[in-house]
Image (spheres, one colour):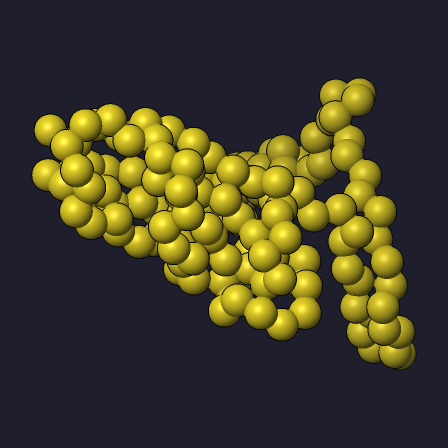
Length: 143
């Protein structure tokens, strides 16, 4: 019984010692400036001044329809109009260089494209339709 207790204690010490902070390679630390917006005794609200947005688009062609899914981290879809708020907005869809529609959801479908090759573009914009400079363009072939 005593031997089991000793073995258990040794295993516990080894396991606890292995989960400490591991050294990080030099040069891999990233700092992001923060702005304190509200201070109270219990809570401090902090907002990142650096908000990198990215756009990842997946699409699937089925007959004459194109299913599109956009992934934009830290982004909320809002109706067109209103004040310009960083992190909010919508998507403008272009086909062959012509604006087709404004979309207010991350996933949508373009139906009834003619046969041939079409250039599709999605652009992420603010509520007031100013660009985030996030745009993806690709070609789809309708058989």
